[in-house]
Amino acid sequence: MKMEPKKRSYPKTTSKKTSSRDVTFSYNVRICSIEVMICKEAFLTVHGLQIHARRVRNLQHQMKQGFAVPKEDGRGKHGNYPHKFQDEAVQSVREFLNAIPKYNSHYSRQQNPNKVYLDCDLTIASLFQDKYSEYCKEKQVPAVSESKFREIFVSEFNIGFKLPKSDTCSKCDGFLIAINNPELCAEEVTEKKLQ
Image (cartoon, rainbow, N blue to C red; front, side):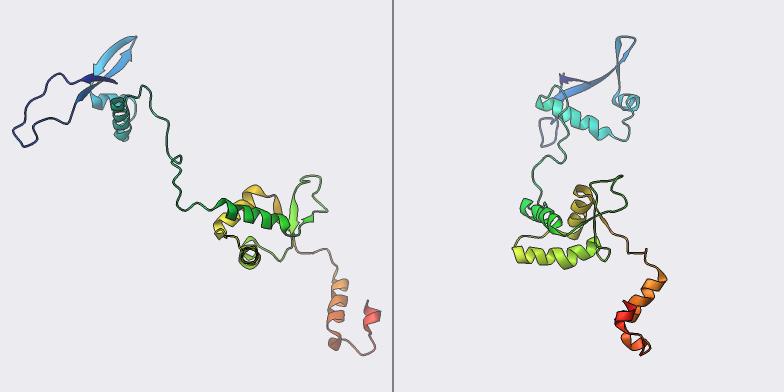
């Protein structure tokens, strides 16, 4: 694609006397080291841009502004993020997650030595709603949303939740129920005997 100054202009009879077009673009394709001029539609088809003609318009606009090569994509680099969480709020999540008590696994220490576990009664949602909200009020720091809390929990920390204890036998479970509910037991069975 080459940019050239327009060769001629025709005066208009309307109120707008001058044309808004100040340059002409020519489209070329190289065939066996020979440049052949083609129309814009053929140029778009050769490069597979029939649906994305706006890309060519953007390049033309940049060429008019004096860029020799296309500008780098500027999406996400503007610095204007009105919904971005404050660094202090994000740091409060990290401090909270570092402060809660965690357990090392007895079984999978060799496969994943850095993984730690939280109590089986907790979930990410209950951590956020019950504990993190209280933590922020107590420390008087801004809180993040639950989705941001979950994102930090999953991406920055190697934390899992313990499975409920399932390695107790039925006899021990029966004794524990009897100790906790003495009114269900016969009178001759004492708590000391059960223990």
